[in-house]
Length: 359
Image: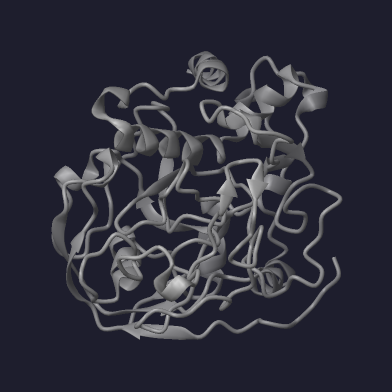
């Protein structure tokens, strides 16, 4: 099994898997590229292999995270724009509390101080999980977006994603980076297991995919974007996404080239911030590309097993909302009903989370 995974990584790292839906038209090509991006930017093994083939100050601000009560109800979940987000289907959810914004660096620091928790990106790598990799190269780290110096083809996402030793939640872009002064930014470089551990410590849990989308739609009519029909309502950016030429030139027209502090953009009708753009958010559901064909109608909890045809045998969980790297030129998964995915133990510097709590 380990040999199979190793070979799979090599294939993905050097050939990609972009043609699966190419015959379906341009819209599907974009969706496929986005799926590949969401896969690659959280695949520690693929990026570590790539790296072999190419050569804090404590702060107590922002420790509280108000929660918003969501009454619950019924809505149409999903979108027909992406293969893994259809068919659109009716779903009902029970009432629940949800964090009004993403978990911040300060809040995660409080968790680490109280529990001495060590995130996955900080832990030593097990040689058994990386056959063929020299032991001296098995250095803790994570995936980091590094924009190329010029325009590049969008067919190889590893031109802008790198495995960076020393990258973790305290050093999101590598050992020379820091979160000092960024206490109210969403914490990033968080794996699903890290997010789940924090939620349990806080007496909360991660949202189901249905709960997350219900909160984002906020009982509004179905539109292309969670906030409405226009990308820039009244000429203003209402979410932290990528503007310019992806991936090398971010014009930062919305005011942020990277992660924005929580509450930098308008809240939705439920009083919740940043459910689109800024950072991807973990959901509790395992990811299956075909799950919506058999999803439960009432309070769906996700499938019992994970399956991603692009990486068979790799356990993944759902991510939602897109991030500051989502671009109309490549990945537009901040649009309403769309989905992301990530390997359970992997992280990157545009991936965070928020929590929910039962009544």
